[in-house]
Image (cartoon, rainbow, N blue to C red):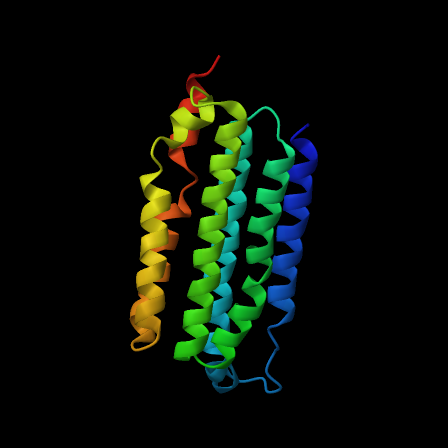
Length: 193
């Protein structure tokens, strides 16, 4: 199957996710800086989630540049990823509205963990379709970065229940790890004639 429809559908879903997140933010009724202060957790939650959606979109794009086609299994793996990413607006709103309450932060971490696992499954599905000698497999290697992210999310979820600020710092750390598009893929693709 051609990868174009998968890419277009994924782009559309991620655009809707970002739109839903911004629509969940409500402007204050007063025209003062003081009216913004209670909204700072909501704004910070939005910024963090926007960055994560951007990271997934960018890396998903790079991932699809390293492949030629998709299978039915890849389509389902991609839908699995999009399912978890579609829950980000809900947990983003909950985390912001509760001013980073421990259960909301743990739920946010759980959604990020599930999305990371789904992305890992998508990568493995694509490698299975293209083979162990494929450009994608050479680029991804043993995927330490993906595995480290999953481990960090588990740690963040545990900390969220007692010290939510530590979990939030771990989320930021993972975002920083992935902020630059996956150079492994860029490096391998640039060497392919």
